[in-house]
Length: 246
Ligand code: ADP
Image 1 (cartoon, rainbow, N blue to C red):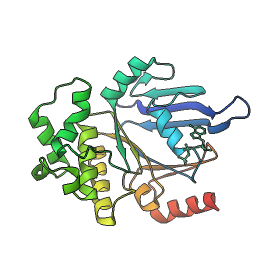
Image 2 (cartoon, rainbow, N blue to C red; image 1 turned 90 degrees about the vertical axis):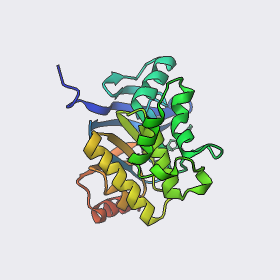
Image 3 (tube, helix red, strand yellow; image 1 turned 30 degrees about the vertical axis):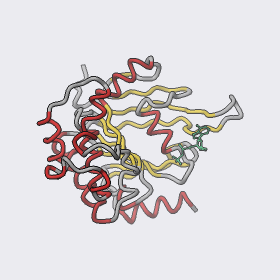
Image 4 (cartoon, rainbow, N blue to C red; image 1 turned 120 degrees about the vertical axis):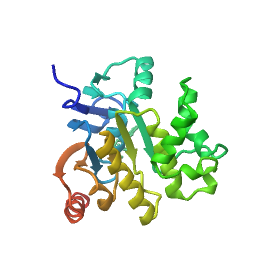
């Protein structure tokens, strides 16, 4: 049997996602195949409307594909019932968004604990402190989001996503709202997670400098994968993106 180590953490096989009425509908994804090995960091780029969000949603089991298969952390989630999917997502997937999505009335540590609490899972105080320390915020556990910088808020969101030790972290423009110093810190943090805990990251970004932090950049246009760069350099990513947007 294939060992978990070599298995893809995220795999899309010939995935098509049509929106709207059959035949007249838009193919947000059109026969997309993508394999993200465990412990890898993949950036998804492409012009607006090219299918980036749809890819992330389908890969995370938040959206149903029209045809093709989706494997997540070794599970075929293509036709999984909602209840099973919710449970699998809770155990294996973390999300980080551009807008942080923290709850303003809760402290950093309460925000980190919140999704687990919602799911009825106990997390210890020390786990929470450890998660915050892991993102360099051990001194900020009692702070509310408005008392934190954007970069610090995003690091709280990363701690919140990581507390369940998910196999895959999905990130949608995680640095989109951050200044360059905070962006650098968040990217270093994501890289450290890939290196030290073997985290798998799938990230949508429009910023070539951010995409260049990933191991691989995949380019979408009109719902299809049209290009791919391994060990990306910023200028190369920028050049290929410009060609797609022209
Ligand atoms: P991106 O994230 O690259 O901007 P999206 O995945 O959001 O692209 O969208 C891809 C295509 O699918 C676009 O043409 C968009 O208009 C269409 N689309 C996305 N979501 C829906 C939806 N819920 N209903 C209808 N069309 C949609």
